[in-house]
Length: 341
Image (cartoon, rainbow, N blue to C red; front, side):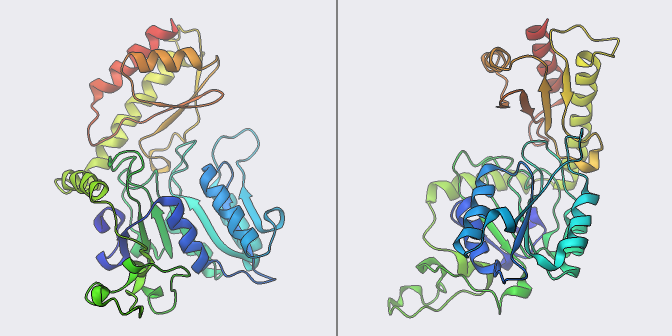
């Protein structure tokens, strides 16, 4: 797991669920003061992340209306200009305690420049964390080298462990001596003395001290099976394939479903919400339809297409490098064309 996120083995723990882990790390890292109490996130953050940030602010006696900065896309644009994030960091950094962003934005599929954001924030003394649910197993990550403070992710998207599978967390080793869990459980006790049962906490160092309880064997088994497959290749090789797969899908969508394309012959136009630059996205494309989704999504599902809808008008489709082919992409577009003829 550590190799997939570019971390040292001792900086990563397999534990809990994603929302639980984000709460645990914010309890330890978010230490607001009257002058530095804000948390910066992206607009349209995944709802759970939004609720977590909101509740953590309220838990510390502050109000989300004044302590939560949600960076918005510019008017008329779908994704966030990273220059805007850097501008907010520069102008408001002295009042920001923590930044918590998705590594890949779940709705648009935008891939953030985590290294640049981390460096700019830390120059202002800001703690930087990432929700990597849509990034891990999707794009190469280098959390340790980027100096990221903490990160959390689930394993049931690109890591294929199944819905509700066990989550993971990362904390940079430089925090080992100073950042401790606010909440403790016996799985955070050092393994060599855990069964002494003397009720004297002998806390594991670093991220492993944040573990609360014995993980499910079944959850760990499904994750291990997926990791065994990833270990047969590298994310760099998979990323090369991913760029071509998603680029092929993008070309087909623009050719058949853009009104100004000579290939257009459809009931619906499709607008791609995801950045067109390969370096600014993972494998996902978010497709925005000009007609209601209900029948389209149902027909895609009946045709065996695994995708995801976000009301009122967006379907997220991801040709995954690990198991999808160019033929799969072509078949999907042909199915979609048939539905929209």
